[in-house]
Length: 492
Image 1 (cartoon, rainbow, N blue to C red):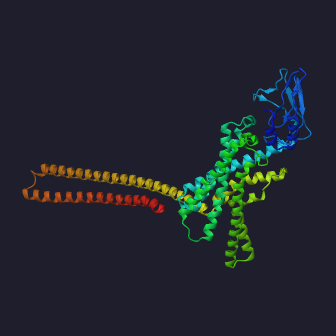
Image 2: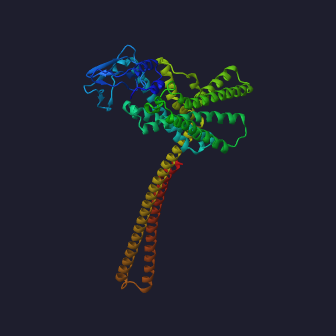
């Protein structure tokens, strides 16, 4: 990029501005030798350099990609024999060696802070997704308040996801080229960031409406909340995109438009919206805390109890409304300050999910109810299986008992028939032998007496056999009843 007057006007680093202003007045040497042209490498300006030599320069205050430079180092740029600057084969662009300018300690600090941001957004992403599923699955939790919580969770999820994508996909080479997909990804990330602040404002707005206004139309309130949360952020991000695309300041279009508010004043359109949301939430927090203190005092509680309840309400409302971000309005280079800001910003979604979902008494009651229902269903299935098994065993025992009785009755009938046949054969034999010797009257008397004796003996034998079988069947039936009924009684 050639050095021009417009370029110098748009620069913000004082050291770079002074160098570029001096080189702007320089003319190419006219001594017949080959020189590389003066150029701006998106960091600083370089003068005409003789071929086959290396230009040595100082280190600016910072790099557009966020690297902090040490003022004690030097930067290098090589001019080749044909009068062109050295081209990096990986990026296919002219390259300046700023390695010795990088403050390694500061670079490690930036890497650690970046890892802290990644871990925070990743943990928040997982917890918020689970909380969103919990609020969706339990029908007992479906209400206007929970719907607003779900939209707040969704804004955290989308912003964390786009932040992680932008951090991993946009490398140094991509940031230098600034392709259209990279710019769109940054705009989408900032839109979800504004949506997040808008839903924080909606939480405060809804809470204030419920406390101050006793009777409110929940449907209209939800519709207004959806418009504020998702539609309203489109206006500031659209205004910024249009104005930044039409501006002549190239600094705002570097690094996929992910610049700094100190270098690109148009970013105040986005940051101003977020700060306004935080300021309104801070006022709402003060008013809500005033109402809570008044109501606690009206209950005639002790001072210690009042203090505990007030602190508990503050701990819940501060992350819910995002008021803690008011404490970090400016960027500081101190490592402790940046670590605290990274923790507060990246883990805020996880904190909100814990307070609104995992530590919520209504959610805990729903889980306990669901667990008790599952235990009751499992106990019912076990008892039904035991009852079925007991009934099957009783049926088999009753069947075996009936088979035994039928077998005994069959044997009794067979014995009776055999005894009758024996008596008939005996009488016939006696008739044939004693018929010639006895008279007719004697034959009749003897025949009657024998028949009576035989029938009485058969009856006694049959009655004895039947009575014994009856007693055995009764005993077996009593024992079977006792064995079948005991498991059922014990189960009941």
